[in-house]
Length: 181
Image 1 (cartoon, helix red, strand yellow):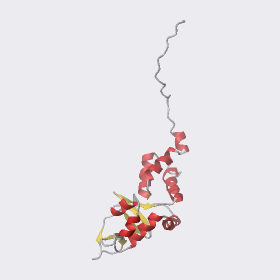
Image 2 (tube, helix red, strand yellow):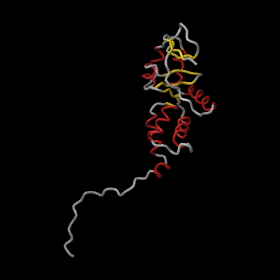
Image 3 (cartoon, helix red, strand yellow):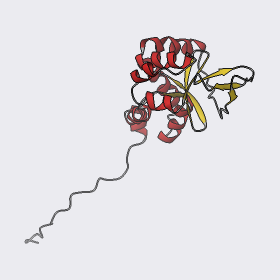
Image 4 (cartoon, helix red, strand yellow):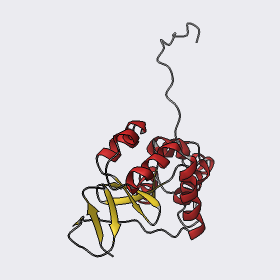
């Protein structure tokens, strides 16, 4: 599959290279073991989310539309202007450095991604850094890092397993010397 960037439309298409577009290197598109039902549910959730609906319209048009761009809010607008979003098979992806991640916006989908990347039995409640790497290569949503930190910090199993050892330091106070032996 070849991914072609069409300058006038700001979208990516898959197909043969031609005079109408230039090849754009995509360093990686994450592959996951998620089922097709999940992807179709994510695709349907875009219609309920205002920012995704606007973004889909912008990416499907041949020419830029300032009227629609004005309706985008941050961080969606900044990422759109930096050409970080693209559309493949009706799914919205966000490109970041070396990888591309699926854009999810529905609360249930976000919870599912967090559970799959952190709580999955074969993963064994990975550390914050490893979970962060896995989420970053799987999905994107606004403020995902903050939500991931909250999720891990409130994970009951991790809190029990990673108890802090040792005594807490006491308060520095003057010790009164006893007068009687």
